[in-house]
Image 1: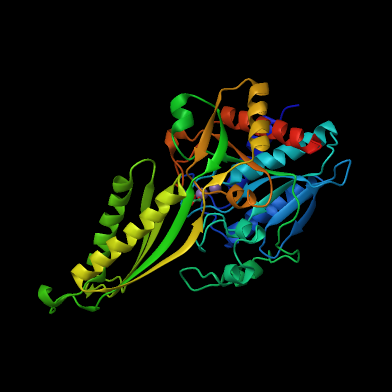
Image 2: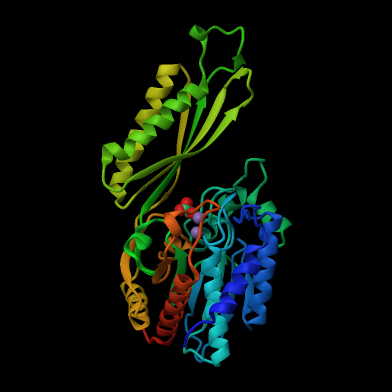
Length: 408
Ligand code: GLV
Ligand code: MN
Ligand code: MN
């Protein structure tokens, strides 16, 4: 049994037009009108594929296909939101490959023992509402529903209100329930598979992730008459923090990465000394203990930067996901699928966060990676060749069927 490559490519093209940027990337940020249109198209396709579609109170969309026995189902999925000026593969591809697996089972009239389904998670990217993976986080019981609803975007809009506005505040409770397994196909978003010429990554786990918010409170004043000697410039302190954060992975070594991705400067005009700056800090490492060390170092970096410029600093370590280890049996099913397909593969650790990270807390979970050209992602240049996508989708199909037939 193999997936229909042409049909998958057609669906990718159709979904990719919703929120497409002039440069061929994607702008379909969570709970925007574009997100709504993307969801509507996916729901239509899911219903056409005969799935029973439900939406939960976080806007996570589930579609389930009957099995011959009413046992806990095998679910596949990912997310359909993108980062601003992102690409057409991150998330979308996993959702469309899941749909293609279901369409393939339908073509063949295959009845699996267990039900098989697909899920589209809300606000995986965390670009608009923090934290990331909020839909799966609530589902897994790791983020309180009310906290998720109260997350606000830059314009102060509430996640709960935006969910309702786009018509995806569903009636189903967003709580853990029995799944036999969760499988997520995703682009690698790093360079390893391409460098090694391998079409498939058998993902063993995901690095630990910590997000912090730093706010520096300086003194807003006029850029002209205020002599340099009496300034307390929040942006100058922020620059020190950016530099200091860059030094943390160097000090800790190994595979740690650290990123300041967002600066919110107030008042952000040419002729005022910045009075307040907010910074986002993203720290990741394969080992939880290294993140603990990094967070203490971050506290020191901020204290020192604030002292030097005479500004006040608030630091909030508001989100942490521990290192995830995927289930042996699910990883084994993915590996067996790659072997059956006869395509090159290797075990790999994910440096990006995924909904699979939260799903792993409530059911046996695994992931399949396909290569990213030049390792690029979260940018419009994101690209994966259709040959590789086909291998990945077939591996998803085989692994899904194996788990859906399993007795365990
Ligand atoms: C999700 O894209 C993440 O890894 O931040
Ligand atoms: Mn993703
Ligand atoms: Mn992403």
